[in-house]
Length: 424
Image 1 (cartoon, rainbow, N blue to C red):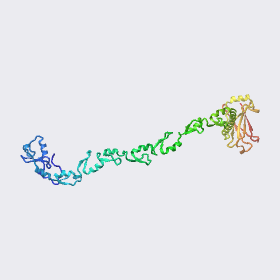
Image 2: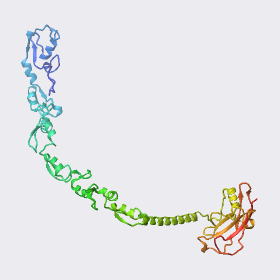
Image 3: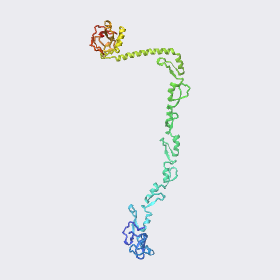
Image 4: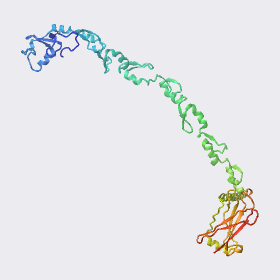
């Protein structure tokens, strides 16, 4: 090794420095032929290059003339220096020869872990490392009392079967970890457990109340029909469709039959009650026919116009005219209409081949005043003017004619006046 590279308190004298490395000489040797001194390592490295001359004066060298210089070594080892860890905070200073002894106790010196872990650290950090960080440190579990290395203890910690822990279901129970599994499966009131009937999972302390209400709970048929048990949610369907002793209504209940009997006896009742059921059906048909007529009447009332204008199209006129010629007094009726909202109810009738004095030559039109829903609110007799206007697809519009009531008769079916229009 080359000379000493430390922080000297005083600059070393020149004669103590190696001419080759420029540092205070380590293990100095002297060339006896010329008296020059060098570090033993520096001189050996110089001569290994094949140059056997003194580095200072270039005189030939002889290995036999090179000797250790103990006196110079004593002087070098006596030089005062600072600790090599002075920049880290160590305040020691002393002779060079005492450095190694100081480093053996220096708190700033880096040393290997005595537990032979890979770490190297300063002596002052060693206690904390040995206590907390060293993977080779020895630790004793406070619960089971077993010894572990630091790295093994990390795996054991939180898994010790003797450690006291709380139930994971938060039921409040505390026990050793080794008893936790048994508690969770058979003792914990907060454990989950499937319902025996519907297989849904519930907390154990609520499953009993669920089972009393479970839709799949087997219950006996209240009619004691002999089927054993039925799931609660299936009981209404069983009573309606399957139970042989359930009381059922007669299938003719909508016709008026109020008989109720067990399902097994219903076929006999239907067979024995054909005539009463037929009478009920006929009465029902009659009632429904009346209701239908009433609905039709109400529908006609709703469809009656109320603006005083009636547009009446007589379809298939040619065919209907021939029918009128073949059947005298054949009368056609228009839809009813009102003169105004809450007004008189009117209707137009037509004799396509004429009527009375106009038969065979004229189209006879009549205006009829019909009984209306608002007659009690109106003035009587009817005294309004009625205007007729005929339109033909071939002849165009015929001049309008006005009909004025001449009588003062009251309302009645068929009451009204007549207008004649020539067929040509």
